[in-house]
Image 1 (cartoon, one colour):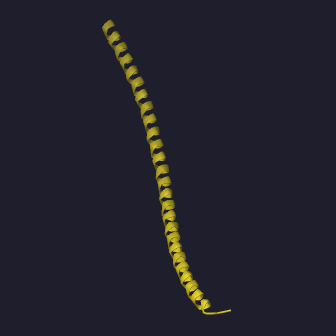
Image 2: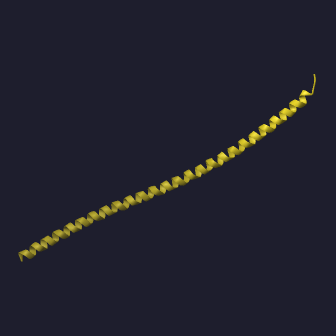
Image 3: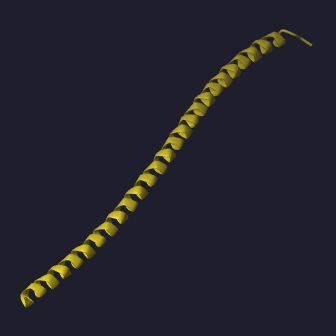
Length: 97
């Protein structure tokens, strides 16, 4: 009978240890789940930021194109103005005072 009590005590102790270990596993599992959620949240924020950066780079590219186009138009206008100035100079040179 004493052996049965000892076996019962030992079984109870093992069950208590198993329960305690399961509690630890559950706690660690919750920590891992929290970390996974934090990583997911950070990834989402990074994705949103990357999209915003992409939109801004596209806007910079658009402005650069517009600036280049404006520069080309300015250069063309300057050439035409120079040509007109040359023509005017030739016409004015015909006048004698």
